[in-house]
Amino acid sequence: MTSTNKAAKAAARKPPAGALKAYVASLTGTSLEYYDFAVYSVASALVFPKIFFPSNDEFVGLLLSFSAFAVGYLARPIGGIIFGRLGDKIGRKYVLVFTLVLIGVATVLIGALPDYSVIGIAAPIILVLLRLGQGIGVGGEWGGAVLLSSEFGDPNKRGFWSSAAQIGPPAGNLMANGVLAILAATLSTEAFLSWGWRVAFLASALLVVFGLIIRLKLEETPVFKAIAAHGDQPKAPIKEVFTTEPRALVSAALSRVCPDVLYALFTVFVAVYATKELGMTTGDVLAAILTGSAFQLFLIPAAGALTDRFNRRLVYGVAAAATAAWIPVFFLMIQGRSEVMLIIGVVVGLALHAFMYGPQAAYITEQFPARLRYAGSSLAYTLAGVIGGAVAPLIFTALYAASGNWYLIAGYLLLASIVTIVGLAIGRNPQPEEDLRWLHNDGAPESHA
Image 1 (cartoon, rainbow, N blue to C red):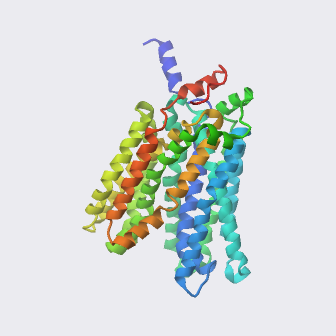
Image 2 (spheres, rainbow, N blue to C red):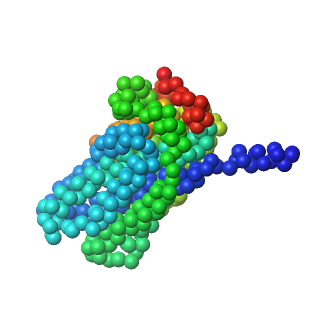
Image 3 (cartoon, one colour):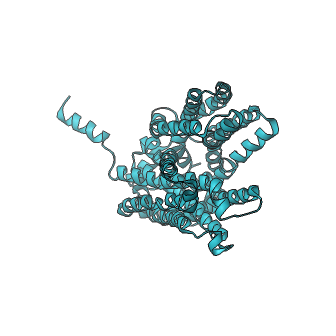
């Protein structure tokens, strides 16, 4: 092999300029989002009912606390509309700086918020408003984070480059549980309720600062710069998505249902089932979830890269079908109350999630033309989140309470798998040539049919 050929192959393997920095910037934002999600989940169950929603009835306080938690989900479509529109009009970078600041400031302020005993009814009201701000920020964060890494990366390897945002859930969960484990080991219950929980929220400021340093140094993505150079930014991107890309919006939204419901099962409901029904310890469940999350750190980008080599819809669909088959196996294998079986079951379940979630970002964004990607992706992601992950824990609980066993839960996952496979069937395959035409300044590509 000549030195010229070696140099050419080395250049082909080298990441595009700014791609690695964009990958880290994308990962940081979604890690903060899921760090907040995990910490807020624990605080909603253990802390907030006591200090922000005091009630003579403990169950009422818990319901009020979980309602405030749900506000964050319900607010996400608002963020998707606001920031999705701006992201396609003024660019990805500036919107992502604002969403990161919004999420971070809201999270830190929750950590510093005086409780009900200090400022009375103002405390829960402010908490709900801050949770609303978090949800709006998160609604605009995901779509931009995905585009940040994918539009700096090689369009032919979009599955891998887009996966940066998808590593956020396991990374955020691991960080949050690490912080909470340290606090639980070093503080008494009284100290944790008094001030220890605040440390977990205030610590998110470190992620915000790190993310801002990287994002402020980034240039605008090459694809958006090319769109702006042609003056082809949409005037009304939200309206245009609904009027010209309804099939893409439906496909992208449905593709998200199964991985969302599956993730809720293996990170939320499994804790209830294993401890209440099987009598296993919280430590057993936590070990299984953390082990599965650790594997996901590597499986998610690997799955994204795999779909750059093989048909993305096929790999995604196989994982969805395998999910429906795995759920009954999982519940049967843990009936013996073995911690090892629980860990294996959760690891496999979260691995199946990784093989959908890893390529999910690429799949959703490539359903839309580049000039409508921020708005289209954000709408699909946030709207699907409301009917998927937001209600899944409640549906699991209701099905389990109604039947007293896991059969209906397995049926729910089967339905979610079918919904996602239908979404994939009506979607489009990757079209990297559109990005390449923008990047090579060959003129604006034709809109998707």
